[in-house]
Length: 352
Image (cartoon, rainbow, N blue to C red; front, side, top):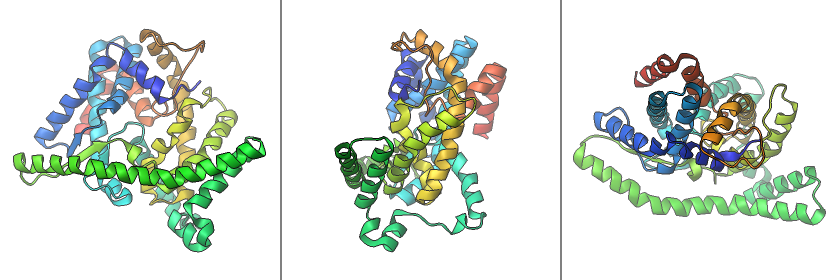
């Protein structure tokens, strides 16, 4: 069963190794910022659970506490590297000046979306499809409005779920409301964050003249965007369908169905808000994630037992978001097979 990121973060922070993830992440950030190897000042402290997650899994796989600490150091370096790379994209597409994302569940989508976007641009027919919220509204008028799109998506999902007429209509109204309210909520949140960003930049300019600074934030700032929400709503039933038909998959999506917007947030920016490409890219991402999450399940189950996590009667657990990420496969896979050599090679590559 997919227990979702809240439970996975509790397991990650619940181990002895995971409990020191926050100071490890902060120290690495300060050092990299001081020597000029990153432009990120990460204020998204909670999401250090992502490095605690991989560190705990490597510790479970190798029973080497020191290697687990090195894993967290290397993973945090990788997050800052990808955060620097996506910063211009995040600021341009989402209109977030001085902000970048440092969330471990969103950043891996960047590396997957880049080659997919290159392929889409070269496939006749698909390259001509432009399905952004703006183009939909331009061509369809009032029927392309985000409220109407949300209503239609909600009604379709309610119908497929075999809801009663009343529940289907209620779901349609709720979905329409989400597509309207979420972007406004995010804009209000950004108004509150702007002084923090400006203050941090002033701090850096005084002490590091000529240096540019990005504030590392959670990709929750992007999930209110219409393309992300629309694609995510469609991907929820698709994810359940994929879990049933994919041969060899052993994970039943559940807890992380609500995390899909975070998984595709940066992918949507790479695809320039194209809903069609985001859905196709999301399908590819989720299919890969299901297989990786199946591979991770035994180690995560053991980590849960070490953290004395209540599995509510489940004999095996996994998590679709972080457990299915290619970064988890890379870091934990090499850490398990090659121990110190594997994690060191990743660290050297990231530094380079």
